[in-house]
Amino acid sequence: MKAPKVYLKRAEGCVDLPLPKYMTDQAAGMDLYAAVIQPIELKPGGISLIPTGLHIALPEGYEAQIRPRSGLALKHGISLVNTPGTIDADYRGEIGLIMINFGPEPFVINRGERVAQMVINKVEHPELIEVEELTETQRNSGGFGHTGK
Image (cartoon, rainbow, N blue to C red; front, top):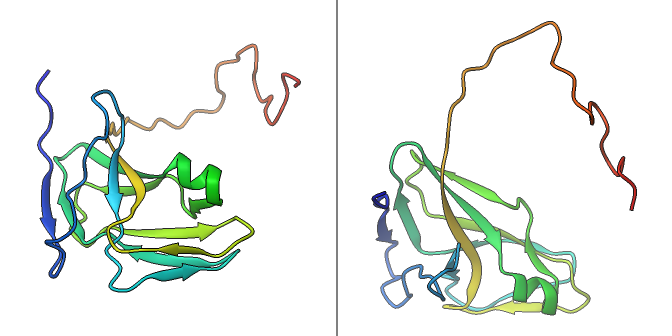
């Protein structure tokens, strides 16, 4: 199967930043970089919109999911508020990251720092059919820990 083509455009003033890239051959996500002009301190509990300096054009039927980096989450409590974030195929604006500091210490985001991952996925639009009843399953409406620890 042929890989889809994703077109990238750097925002003005961002030619110094690397393009997204996979850090290993089998990585699912490619790293995104902070395009902040000056360092931004994210205080504990703080939320900030971090620019990536990147615009993309996805093929029809695809999305880009924006996810936190596990190392930043484990070491510093840094995550994304809307995780995963979705970039739709028809969006052409700059990708921004709504970052949050769940950690106990302030965290400084520097220009060019790897701050998130982007995963490209195929999207299906199923036919929605309204019915009076759904088929039953063994689980049915069980949720939120219904199978125990």
